[in-house]
Amino acid sequence: MIYLVNIFSTLVALEFFYIMYLETFATESKETARVFNLSSEILADKNFQTLFKNQGIYNGLIGVGILYAVLFMPEMLLPIMIYIVLVALYGSLSSGNKNLVFKQSGLAMLTILLIMLEHL
Image (cartoon, rainbow, N blue to C red; front, top):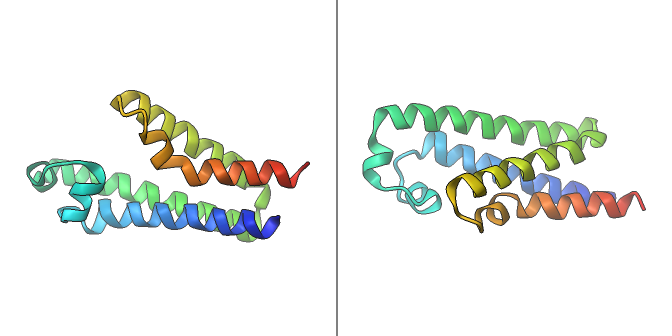
């Protein structure tokens, strides 16, 4: 079961690295506009880009934290995954997009389930 937990945790980390890439390096791309449902005008705004890139660094560091936990502190995976679900829940409620919680934290929810099954 630990292998599945590590695989799913790594997938969550990769998801956060992808989000970091979109927000920090591909800020004005068509893919970024599609994923975040934003117009090219908004993505071209320099003030928005500054905020978006800052948010991207946070997401990348969450990915680093997950990989660190997988390799050195597996007991931290559950709290990190719960944090991810809570942030996605907030984003879903604040945006009015109820499906957002599953898009942003679906893998984290599965990882939580695997962690809990591992400890039964």
